[in-house]
Image (cartoon, rainbow, N blue to C red; front, top):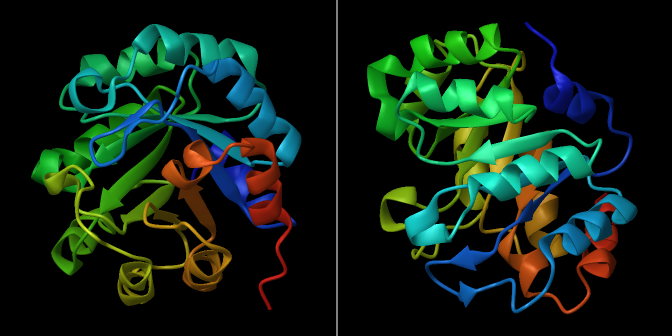
Length: 229
């Protein structure tokens, strides 16, 4: 298995492996930035011990900005994951050129093209987080050469407006071979959620709960250092 920045950092992490997301807008919760500087939030995540940074570049529903991705990549030494509804190989090339470390590839969108897109991203030096939300999608993801598989606890088809929770991670994780780094995504808002997520996955990707907090550094540190046993 290829060993890249984000997956390697997760495997070597000796605390709770938290990928903290700079999420400026949520279709469900609206404006999450609330006038704050996204780079200041990035720095708060770094100080709190996040293992990596995630950023959504999709502009319509999540108000993402590819130029901000570039800036985030330049401002941090942590691995950066680009999240978007990637459908072309040109987007993979753009992600590599922006010096991101990893890219999200969604099985529901790419379907039988997923293995091809994974290999193309790996060839461009990117970790791949292949996202699943069902048993059938896990079946597709495990046939790829991806470094990571992400279980999205919420339904991206409903733009995360559903009430999905970490029990989906508990359900799908046993179907994923140990050679893949497993990431539990979304629907994680408490330490109790985190306990479930990290019982079944190697890392947790959290955005909304951190962005809704008045003190992002404090809440991320709480999640990173929480005793889960």
